[in-house]
Image (cartoon, rainbow, N blue to C red; front, side):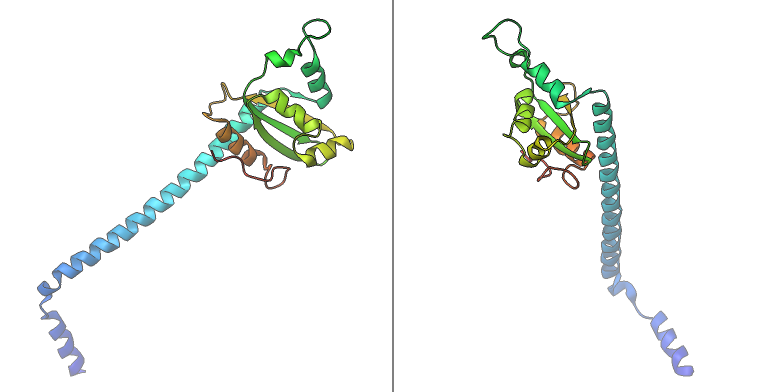
Length: 184
């Protein structure tokens, strides 16, 4: 027992001034490590909040857009402003944006983009777009179409708007989209 007391007293008499620099370095490293953990958690929370906010904004944006059937879309697109030989009305009203195709029969979405949006949507229902969408349409599945112009959407690029809409609608995970959207 006396040996323990003696070794404890020797420890108290130990000159720690030699180790003061190492103790300070260790404390600084510990402080930096804890700071990195806090920053990492904060960034993760901000990312989750941003994703929720974007999903909410996409849903809000699409809730103010009217849906139409492919038949209504074709009627609108193929109308002309005059007689024979006149261009379709839609030729004068092309705009950049995204479209959301919803298959009500299978509860699946396809989200795409186009600089000439009406032409791009038309391609899907005439066999020149996503083959799975066309096949389901051809065999009688019920679809609706939403068109969202880039202008006024709050997004800067079509790629950005498309990516977030694909995510919001689960079009990659559960729908027709084969990618999560363009990165450019």
